Image (cartoon, rainbow, N blue to C red):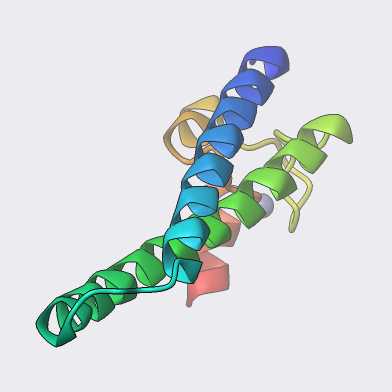
Length: 108
Ligand SMILES: [Zn+2]
């Protein structure tokens, strides 16, 4: 597996998410000057934006963990049993740190 390519795609995803988070933060901190009905609508939008922001933050944490694993040359190594994680799994779940067997054990 080409780590440089994975790294590249993680970094571009990271940029995209940081950009999105920046715009959400900007929007949420913008003082509202609408009338009451518009403010209510605005609050609903803000809640949706906050949820998206939380999701983006969570994904950013996963991305930086994956990048660190690449830097440490541990990207394809299961954190739990030390076996290598199959490429197909890494392609499907680029942020995973466990092989399928260990991931199932973690969940159950
Ligand atoms: Zn494992």
